[in-house]
Amino acid sequence: MIKGIFYSIKQAFKQLFRNKGMSLASIFSITAMMMILSIFLFLSVNINYLTENVKDYFGTVELFLKDETTEEQAADMMKDIRVMSGVADVIYVPKEQALEEFKIRWGERAYLLDNLESNPLPNSIRITLSDIESGEMIAGFGSSLDGVELVRFYRDEIEKVIRISNVIQRGALVVIAFLVVVSVVVVSNTIKLTVMARQDEISIMRYIGATNWFIRGPMFFEGILIGSISAGLSVALSSLLYIKLCDALGDKAFMLFYTQLVEPRFLIINIIWIFLALGISIGTCGSMISMRRYLKA
Image 1: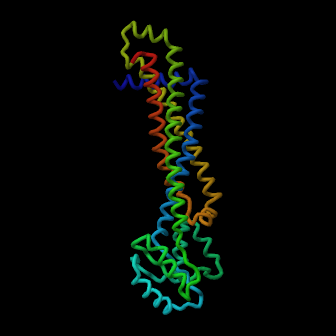
Image 2 (image 1 turned 90 degrees about the horizontal axis):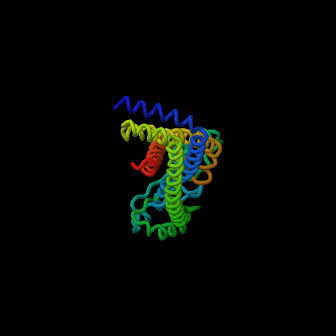
C-alpha cells in the first residue's frame, strides 16, 4: 500500500513535467483565481474587524468637555446622566487616560504619539448604554449641557458600516463559489489531457491486470500537486501584497477608519491553512471528476 502511494506520487511528478505546458497553465490559472479570492478574503476580514470596532462605539455616547470644565462640574453632570433611562454606566475619562487608550489602539505604531508636544485630547464623560434606542435622547441631553463641547454618537454611520459589511460578505461568498467551480474545471481538464495522452498505456495496464487504484493513483496525486503548488504560490504572493499594503496604509488606516488593519501575521497564518485545504480540495475534486468521466470510475 505504502509502495503504491509512493509510486503514484512519483508518477504524478513525472506527469506534471510531461504535460508541463498544461500543468503550468493550470497552476497559474488557479493561482490567479486564489489571488482574487485572497483580495475578497482580506477585504471581508478587515471589514468585519472594522465593524466590530465600530460596534464598540455603538453602545456608548461620549461627551467631550470644554477645557474650562472642572472635574467637579463633570461629576454633577454624571449624577444627572446616571438616573436617565437606558444608561448602564457613566465614567469620567481624563485626557491622560484617553491618550493611553489611543496608544493601545495604535499598537506597534503608538510611538508616533510620543512626539506630541501636548495632549490634544479633551477630558470626557463616557456613557455606556443598556438600551441603544435611548442613545439619541441621551446624546441630545448631553449636547444641551453647558460644559460639553462635542457629543459623539455615530449610530447612522455604524448601521451603514454593518449594511456594507453584510453586502461584501454575501458578494464574497458568491465570488468564492464561482472561483472554486472554475478551478475544479481547470484541474479536471488538465487530468483529462493526461488520461487522453496515456490511453494506450492505460489499456495495456488494464489488460495485464492492474488495479483501478494503480491506474488512477498518479492522476489523483497530480491534481493534488497542482492544487497544492497553486495554493503555495497564492499564499506567498497575497501575503507579500498584504504586508506591503499594511506598511503603506497602516498609519493612514487609523486616521481614516479609527482602527488599524488586521495584523498580517494573523491573516497569513490562517490563510496558509485555508488555501492549502482549498488547493488540495480543488485538486482532489478535479481529479475525481476527470477520472470518473474518462476512466469510467
